Length: 319
Image 1 (cartoon, rainbow, N blue to C red):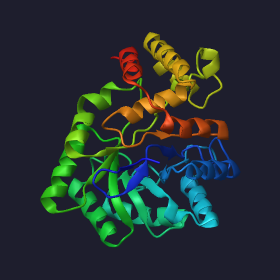
Image 2: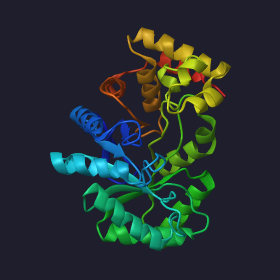
Image 3: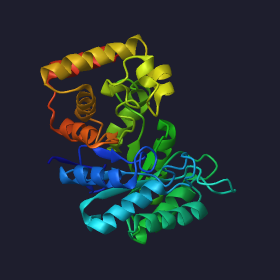
């Protein structure tokens, strides 16, 4: 299966990443194990998580997703077969200093992630969000230490604005620190403008790999939400109605339906395949909660859109 490099890291990954924020949120460990088996069994290898997944679920404290992945890797001896991307920086507790990109916090957080993942290294360690209260130099110096210690292979950024990402890259170059090799922004057929206007040109110029999240726009681009009633049952239902259920959203779904029909496929596969045609995208991230959805994710990798398909989708999603 075709593989792509994460920026200039030397790390090779498949064209699709598995999002695991649903682990111990909308699915249990048994289903998570089945999905991980199916994903890696198809030849894909990039698994994206974060220390904060899935803290928002009543009774959870954060770290649940990493814990499930760690158990799966240990039981199946899979560590060498996968690329693990996790994140640091989001709020993990109520106490002072339980978030951010300070040296003290990152050092504590990486050890906790390594324990949960039951591994001695993380392939891609990502700043989950920008931290304006910590000097960029302090954050990058800390990552340099972790790379030197062999605990982290490469670093990435998530939810950064273009100016702050560019500033970070400049400081890395100036001081000889590891530089961000990837960016994780929100990007899909509907949510295009914010990424394409400033971040995409920067990523292409600097050879930053992009692993975008919400590739299916919280499920909307799968086509399963056609009415407000449909959305009432989904985990992101209210946000789908508010953000996507409008004239432009329906126009995009119509184009997805038309392209799907030509390929005997479905909207979810087509929406992900469109992302894979973008020159800036290394691997979109998508989640599954059952094996049927996992089949759609895997098949999207093999779907080849032609020029007319791409132009039709671009036109329908124009902003």
